[in-house]
Image (cartoon, rainbow, N blue to C red; front, side, top):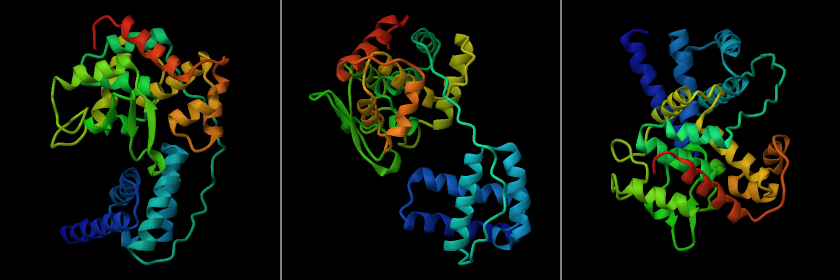
Length: 293
C-alpha cells in the first residue's frame, strides 16, 4: 500500500477498535478481531474496504491450509464484524469447506514433570506464575491479572475477576501458594499487580509462553505444553485424587459440564475433599522443588 492507502487503513483500523469497544467486546475478543483485520491487510496488501468476495474466498482458502479451524472461524467473525459495524456492508458467507473435526485430548504433565519444569524455570516471576496457574487451575490471562486486592488470605481464596465470558469466581488459595505469592511480591512490591510487567501492566503473555517452552526443553519434557496445560494438569490430578467433576467445573469456571467431563477420559477419579486435595497438590509441589519459590 502507498502512504495514502496506509493512512486510510489506519483510520479504518481505529474505527474497528472503537466499534469493538462500543459493542462491549472483551479484551481477548478485541485482540482477536483486530488481528484478523491486520492479517488480511498484510497478506493481500490492500485496504480492507476494497476487498472483494473473491479476495475473501482466496484468503480463507489459504488460511485454512496453515492455521487451525478455530483461527479461521475467529478471523471470519472478526471480518464479519468489521463489514457490519464499520463498512455498513452486508457480509457474504464464504463457501469454505469445514475440515473434519478432530477432538484431541490435551497433554498432561505428571507430578514428576511438574517438579522438573519448575526446577528448570530460571526466571523467578515465571516460576511463581507457573506454580500459581497450576495450584489454582487458572487460565493464563486470569493468573496475569490477579491484583493484590484479589487475595483474601483470611478466607484462603482468590477472587478471579472477569474470567472467560466476563464471569467472576472464587477459587481456594492453598497455604503454600499464598506463601509463594507473598515471597514473590516482596521482590517487586507493586501496589496493584502480583505479576507486574512494564508500564504498570501485567507481565507479557508472549514472554511467559516462551519461558515455559524454554523450561520444558531444559527439563527434557517433549510434550506439547503451554500455560493452559498447567490448568489441564491441575484438573486431571484433582480427578485422580477423587474430586468430583461438578466441583472441578466450578473451580475452573466452565459453563458447561461437558467441557469438564473430558478430563474423565484421562483418569479414574475417587471421592475426597476438594479443598484438602488442592492443598495437598500445592504442598507436594512446594516440598518437591529443589529451591524454595
